[in-house]
Image 1 (cartoon, rainbow, N blue to C red):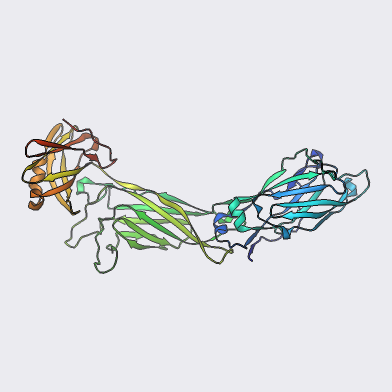
Image 2 (cartoon, rainbow, N blue to C red):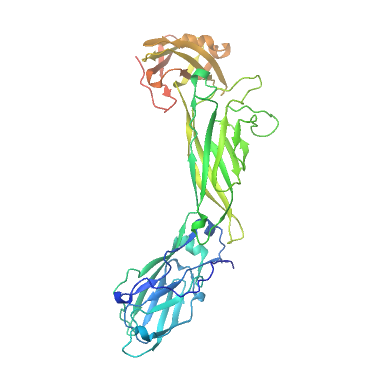
Length: 466
């Protein structure tokens, strides 16, 4: 059985109240003894942790056979560590009687002591006498039970030998938080916040090619009497990483070009997929960074990837060991927590469905309510999931409405033009609030089907123009 202990405190329990207060108090440390939640996570069923000093400052006159009861919440106490007998010598100069108590009964949640003897003249008193139940590190508590209860509170009560309530004047500390449990580790995530630049064809961000995610781990272990030891940190970022070109078609997963995904010292990128990047950091507490650089990301024909607006989430897990238990532990600090997004410095609208064929015509009117001129680019996804970029199909001036349907149709490959069921993303290098898109289609020249477009930034439905 393993125990977590601090160095024994040789001094007896100190008083927190004056005898003149005439009120009973339980007397412990100046602050509750704190244990790390993560330390207790690793505990086996028989592991124990130690309590701090504990005593009782009497506030009434006690007689032989009177009873003092200490209640311990959580049923975590190892009652075999309670003292069977406690003796306090008389202090004649303070007119304090000597008192001896014997353990009457005990359990995992209670200790009952009986006054077995008093020493000193009748004119002396037990008021203000402190009963040192235990010095630091004597009392043991089951670690798993303490964790389940969230800590241990100790409360005081007393009765006369006739069974009547005793010492009920009520001090400030008739109940104390004796053991507390709190989280040792925490995480702060500084978001990805790149703004995709439509001026570069969405191949870079405004102001450069990089964006940085920071995962900062805080280890508060020094503030606990018992704490876990951080081993490493696992992290995973979810979002759209389909723009990353794979440099090795043989190896499983995506193998980015050097520099596309860079991490701080002590960290590694373990796996990359179209929607996930994950890794490990062994640096312990502190800031760990993932730098995304779209600059080195070049395709097999030397082409750059087209970036898409996306939201990111992060999952961060700390792994640790401790002096308790035979196995290490782990705690998820962030589970799918927001890790920022990539936005677009322009308007981008998704047309979720647009059919093409010999008897089908398309209607797409783009309105510019602003004062600037901007290029219009279109990407399409066919019914089989293949993406085709049509590039710049038009330029729209201020205060105009432009029919882009024939321009999009002319830019489509013949196979999609003659028989395609497409989704289109229309991007305009203009402020999003200035743009509005109306979309519909005709079948056989008479059956019109309206298509509701969506603002890609917020997925808010746009109000169609007539």
